[in-house]
Amino acid sequence: THAALWAIWAFAKLGDGDTAGKLFSLINPILRADTPEKANRYKVEPYVIAADVYSTDSHLGRGGWTWYTGSSGWMYRLGVEAILGLTRVADGLQIAPQLPDDWPGFKATYRFGNSTYEITVARNGDPAQASQITVDGAEIAASVIPLHDDGQVHQVHMQMHTAKVNA
Picture 1 (cartoon, helix red, strand yellow):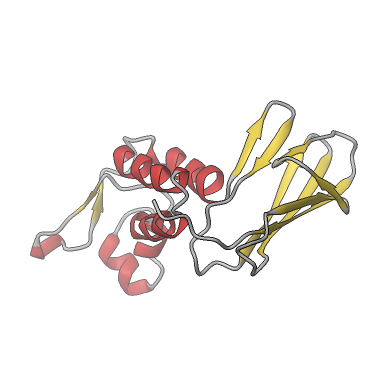
Picture 2: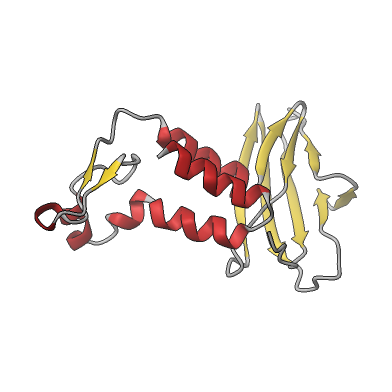
């Protein structure tokens, strides 16, 4: 399972957020148990990555070996760092999303000490335009937001270009 997650991460790093998002959905355990019928078939925790999903007729779709792997942690990091593109670096938070083509954007709340960063990422609709990030209304030149533990609520907005990178 680790290798599958790292392969998805590679698609995101190559700039192919669409493939990364589709593969992420394929292995997302929540989607294997999001109805009573699916949960009854899957039979394991929907918040842990199963190492096995059985294909024999008598156990078709049933998960197994859920607690012996660290894959859940890797999947969380994959979603947050590689697809949403939120990565802590030194004294800042880098925003470099690789979203699936059909996602219009996302909202996230990031806490740093006593401060809160309310992050909104939205596609700008113009593939010729570069991405733009503002913090509390002021544009920043880099993709790294400087973090300050000042007890304030900060508004972060990213207008993301829509050009798809072909990997």
